[in-house]
Length: 113
Image (cartoon, rainbow, N blue to C red; front, side):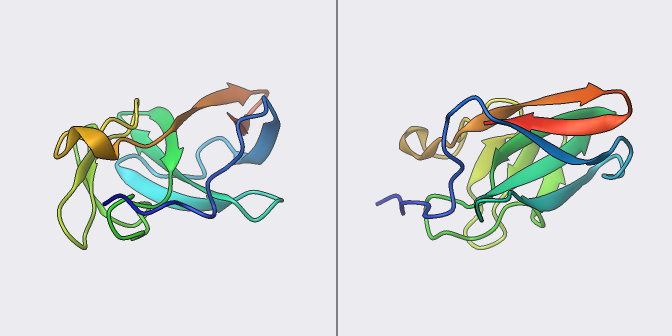
């Protein structure tokens, strides 16, 4: 049964300034904590930034530091795989997570929740 994520960002259209462009190296992920204490996982895949919920719905394991395979991140705890651009779980259809828009403007990264 999927675990509810207590640190899932609220969908309210807010724009969060994250950091300078280039802060996340290509092929890597980073945990981003927003001002309200919620978290997203931010990835740089092929020079394009993607943001999804930071926790696997299976057991709540953080995804930002998990292994990346192309455009997929694999939860290190039980192997669930998520598409970093959509949040779709390719391992189990009922475990998809939210994806968030990422905007780079004037050299700064913003996440829209």
